[in-house]
Length: 464
Image 1 (cartoon, one colour):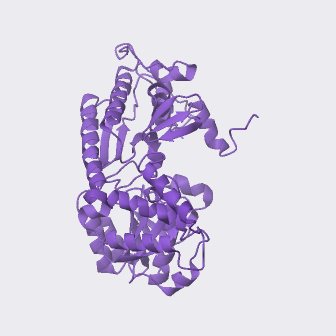
Image 2 (cartoon, one colour; image 1 turned 90 degrees about the vertical axis):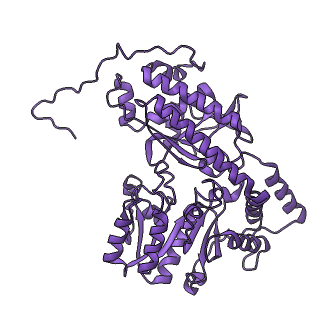
């Protein structure tokens, strides 16, 4: 039976097909995927951090088999679901500060929506303050907190009651609090801007933000949806600066790569009965998904948080090796950034790269897409851009990634950078024509490439 392949998202399907990213993966095991042709790929995306232990980890399936053996009911509202209560108590025990109450949901964007409603109902104020270049989700409230106009405009977002300040700028935060603190319910911030391209703030920024919010009576929301649960080299990224938020948000890794699960954690001082009576969700407090959440937390905490310590060491190794690539290829790599196993490789804009095609790809935001297609089809490595930064590749593997896999990716990136340095761009396009062989010989075309010149404008023309 022939199936249409564009029914999930015809807009993205065109892009996936054009760059040969339209693989149908049939098997997932650890950090590897196998497509319908039997080709094996190394996954270095981990579904943006939502696959923390690779695909189909044994301990998650053991937990699911235990749930089935016990015939636990999944959805039993209104009641006191046992697994949800256990997970809430476990999270309250290990979370920073006075966080206690857990509002469970199915996704990060729902956790953000809950936090917005909680902050407004607690303070009686309207404004939610966030940062430019942030990412907090794509439902209307969380999209309004997301500091990216291009995501908002078609949907008439932001909704009323949202304002933005620069990230990593405590002075800007203090200035807006000086002027409008009596109208601001909360400040929501990522410890590291994830989809913004892994923007790591200067040491002390998060703590300064917490103290300013305390000083002005504004609730402090830390969005740990991508950074939390080991990703940054700590259980929670805010632990690096001993920050104690009023509200903390988790999702992605909490579901163990199997079930969708998110949570809005809040302190007793922040909780209010209006929120308690009026906020609910049919699929919240699911015993099955919360049982998985417990297994995830247990795995991260076992052996004195051994896995998380390994994440920190692996992250340091990857960051060091990527920085060596940046030194080796300064004309190709603009910057390397990262914390733990969330890293970014940002490329130069290639304004004068000797190729109109490449310059056009950069201008259209497709440069890293063709790089991702090249790496996927030639080296069998899954990498992807960040949503807010089209010149930056995401390196965000599973937390238990091995040294051998990291070295393989680093070697492939070295080859990629050499191609870009030597301007042998035909090697990047070859896979689109059916040549999937890794490059053996890279030709240096720098001496023969010509400067790209703009066409002269006639008197009635102007640059749009």
